[in-house]
Length: 431
Ligand code: DLL
Image 1 (tube, protein in one colour):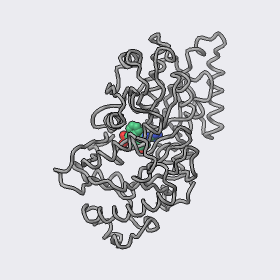
Image 2 (cartoon, helix red, strand yellow; image 1 turned 180 degrees about the vertical axis):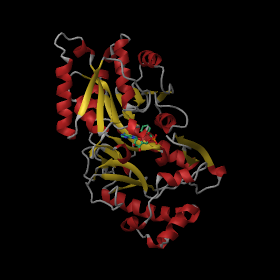
Image 3 (tube, protein in one colour; image 1 turned 120 degrees about the vertical axis):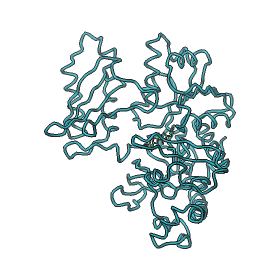
Image 4 (cartoon, helix red, strand yellow; image 1 turned 180 degrees about the horizontal axis):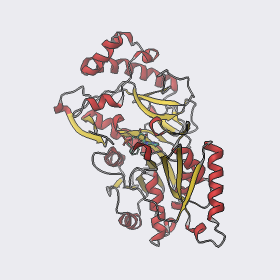
């Protein structure tokens, strides 16, 4: 599903296409979604004020709460009979947010997913073991239909049942695995425990990992333990699902499929559009979405966008890895801490296992405490000095975070493992 005519468009051509589509989409949303008419009226503008990308900043933002307020059938530009699919994201509080798709939307999404696979080197003939959850979550069906469209063979195993996953990896000789990066780490660990030699018994070449933040260090661990190439895939249910952006063979940033998505980076506090290359909140407009147009949707995901030409030949701008979400940020005694920083520090240290849990407590002052598993090698080594090792981790964390974190070393295999998105933070202040 490599589409060179689209994937190799140069930036000025991409911008031209985006500009045309953006103007059309603004009018479509205004004419067909009462919420947008209202937002435009309140902002004192009409679609005629939007003549190209240079006017994008005038268009009001859309936020997650707009979706919640339109429960159950969402922000919709078409009658219900045109909807062929719905998904929903599990809201942590109250009702889920529902997203809908027309036949054309399904076709766009599936094509984007096929493009993602192909960008990671997956071809017809590959066997894709799809361990993303099937159901309301977009991961399972997104990766499923994309693989079929490419002509690959899909094993729709969904999440969980790790022993069976391992058996299938061996017996079916799956060449591609699709799951969250935290589950990939767990699978590698479980394989060893169950007596498999991942590199010899399995035939996996490529991993399609996403749905949660992960670090370069986690990538190294996954690639080394499974003997594969691990590619980062980004998306969210509001933007079809997975398939918004993916890495290419360079593994140096995720190309945003810019024929379908316009991305901007804004200052989370002021909403100001930031100059190219500055880290900020990603704001997306879907350029051809039929059922559920979203204009300037604030994602809360924080990243830097790189607009330079990539060595792979593509000019579609790249997300230089999602650093976390603005609502993931922990404020500990006034200092901002992202869980991804903790992972980055810990996973660089030999002897630290793949699992950790950040616990925030409020005593008199906020305190941060990190449970960290040690590797079986360190745990069984005669030189293992838990007090000294904990002190070393505390020192390295403090040097980067500037706040003190108490380390509690855990025996291998004692922290909970995740089958989907990992839960790495337990903030008792929110209890
Ligand atoms: O997680 C869609 C998806 C499925 C993407 C499978 C990739 C693979 P949601 O459940 O709506 O959709 O969650 C979206 O997950 O706003 C990010 O905060 C986070 N996220 C998704 N992909 C990545 C990634 C799916 N590669 C939210 N790196 C997004 C970091 C990611 N965070």
